Amino acid sequence: MVTTYTIASGKGGTGKTTLSVNLGTALASFGKETYILDADMGMANLGIVLGLENVPVTLHEVLAGKAHVSDIIYDGPEGVKVVPSGISLQGFQDANPERLRDVMKEIINHCEILIIDAPAGISRDGVIPLAIADEVILVINPELSSMVDALKTKILTELIGGKVKGFILNRATFENTEVSVKKIREVLDLDLIGVVPEDPNVRRSAAYRQPIIIRYPDSPASVEIKRIAARLAGMEFDADSLKKKKEDKFLDRLARSMTKRGD
Image (cartoon, rainbow, N blue to C red; front, top):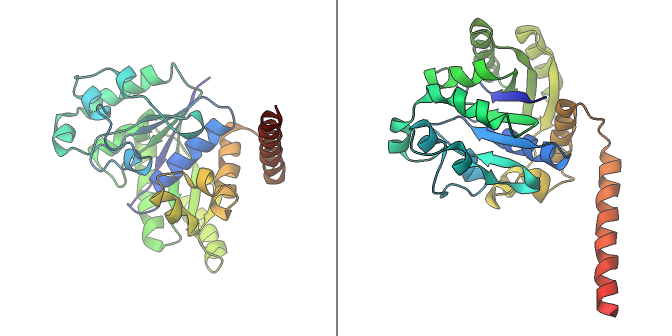
């Protein structure tokens, strides 16, 4: 059974795209057949984050009727499949957002989990990803404006018949996390899915065009993102166990390389 999550936020700059990329990559690393689709057709960033901004065909061309879905599925880290939007303004003008439903129907035939990176804010293009997903996950920063905008997105989602699963508090700091979680719960009346701490390694990994869970797998943000991904996948998460498996794999590779040298 396929599950579709739309990752949304009431405003830009919350880290929504970075979370979409890392959650999708983490789910793929857990053995889940996962696709990430960039539905932010006007301000597409998913491809840029993964170094796919220069691919020849994107979601724009499919939504314009100029290409097939099979033409725009690209390989990402850990086996995750990526469906990027283009960065061309002409491509954005030619794209018909109404065709996104048909694109999603075709994609879900090939995956277990589909992550949709939605446009920030409230717009015509942004309504469709909120409506077509099984569940919407709101990404919120510990700021009043972010919380208020997320409330608007929640109300809109429910008005169009969508379902909000809960919220992720992103870029949280020790000083304000507890207060923010309590306040957001009260205002939004939603479950907390996870708290991702402020982590300088997020910016560092972005410079390398890599998800933080790949570049800095043991950093605080990476651990929490993997914890959230495990929850979405219905799996138990044990950070120590994952670390030990990684160490065992390293030792196994080292042993094999030493054996080859001795031959």
